[in-house]
Length: 334
Image (cartoon, rainbow, N blue to C red; front, side, top):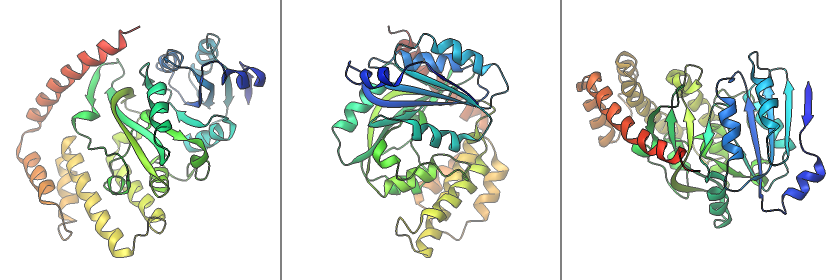
């Protein structure tokens, strides 16, 4: 393991009193040499600096470690780089959390970016919401070439306050948009056996307090072939497993859990249809016809079954053009 302190402990403690926000930022890095420089620069361009930046390279086999070291030489606040063997994302996040000193905690995947006002806006929101355990918001979705694919504000029905019902419907905060209260996060951490790093954690945190929602779009989540979220079958099965593990904490009896999981599968029917996977959608739909389903969801599923996928792609391209223009305007701001 290689560890480099690019800011001393004294510097780190002093930074909290010089206008920096009391936030620890962790970047878990793994084989994102094409994107990691943009990720780090987006953190350094924040309107208010964090207290510290901890970068952990999780066994990258590409040029990521060299790029990380080079970029962090220009970091204007205390930072630390750790390069070690691969242990997985959840273990990396738990390690980053254990090294953090800030009142608040955020992590940014090495292929994602923040817009300049992210940290300042999220800290202000949590400071105003003592009952909240985290703050989150919308995100742009961008591809490998930084082209906007979509924005979650076009389709995600995020809520403010009690997030349990929203989470059980498998509507979850995008990880690049979240700022946590460290004290609460430390009581849970990430389940290192889970393949969806955040979902089970969100369920557990929702039993402790509110989720503060900010409608601003202040992050960009990158979609590419390496994303777990492109594997809808894996996401559905992992979501069901997380719900089963947390059911007792949320006070769910077996019949309630079964009804929730039937509804979850129907939501994935819609996701499969949205992605053009009609055969998988139909198989899942026929396997869950006995469960109670909202009429509005059935109508949406029926519409997606009848509308040709080329029409869906055409509408998506129009939406992409609109949000791409907005994203470009924000990126161009100093």
